[in-house]
Amino acid sequence: AQPLSPRHFLDLRDLDGTTLRQIIDVAAGIKRMQRDRARPLHPALPLAGRNLGLMLSQPSTRTRVSFEVGMRQLGGDVVVLSPSDMQLGRGETIADTARVLSRLVDVIVLRTGQTDDLHELARWSSVPVINGLTPASHPVQILADILTFEEHRGSIGGRTLAWVGDGNNVATSFIEAAARFGFTLRLATPPGHEPDADAVSWARAHGARIETTHDARAAVRGADAVITDTWVSMSDRESAERLARFEPYRVDAALMALAAREALFLHCLPAHVGDEVTQEVFEGPQSAVFDEAENRLHAQKALLVWALCGEDWTRFGREH
Ligand code: CP
Ligand code: NVA
Image 1 (cartoon, protein in one colour):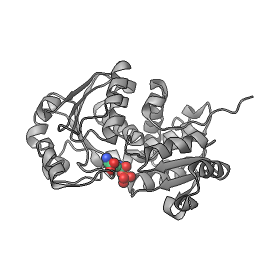
Image 2 (cartoon, rainbow, N blue to C red; image 1 turned 135 degrees about the horizontal axis):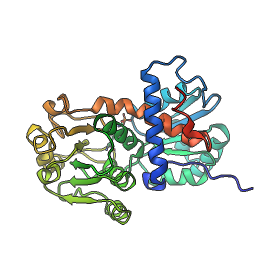
Image 3 (cartoon, rainbow, N blue to C red; image 1 turned 120 degrees about the vertical axis):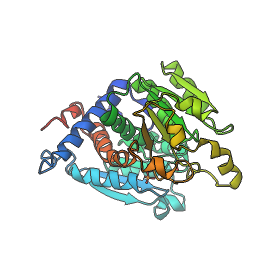
């Protein structure tokens, strides 16, 4: 028999809507178990003896801690690998690195500034590879964001979300999510920082309503959530000109007032309060940003169970 291909998680578009929905539902179940303080937290320890290789070539707080803690809560363990400390830094190829790590760990998370490296790693790896952020996308973040929206505001299908700011990696993953979860996404970006055209046309071809504009107020009007992100991503160079272009896209109370009365404010963090969002909105009652950060843990535990626990992985999260 052919070996099954590993369950990579490179971009949301690679998974069907049913599987993504199941991941969110399992994540919600896992979160309930944790909130009920069931002890031991996961009696079945579904990942006992399994190891995650966490390769981060850029800084991270949430991605690192949530994958590390999540893996341990599920009974597994983690090896944190800094690519500059690996032989990769001295020229060992990604293909060889992938084939070696596949013999030693059970799943790999990669955060990289070189999007091609993620695809090269996945091509050569016989264990699941998870995208921990590239300049092109950040799909694990969006799992947490969907979970956060739904726990505060109910089902996301048919709702309208507004993205204000940079058409960056997180925006691209939101665009793909709009197709997979059936919500409308309006994106307001400055000229020159529009969302990825390929992602927009892919999502539209897959039934999503994606509206792009340069007018933040038009995007936000009546929306069920307002989302932003830093104006300077890790793959960008900061400059005064760049920041000036984003000034009209700051999420402030006046902008939030145009959204639905109960609109949620989301931000993947880290935030630059005073730039992309005011203190008033960031700390205000509509802000769910710290739930969003916590939900990285629950969502990624569900993702790890999907990647590693075979066909009946959805049983997990229903054990209480
Ligand atoms: N949101 C996010 O991915 O945060 P880190 O960069 O801290 O991992
Ligand atoms: N867009 C940001 C997200 C950080 C989690 C970046 O790429 O730096």
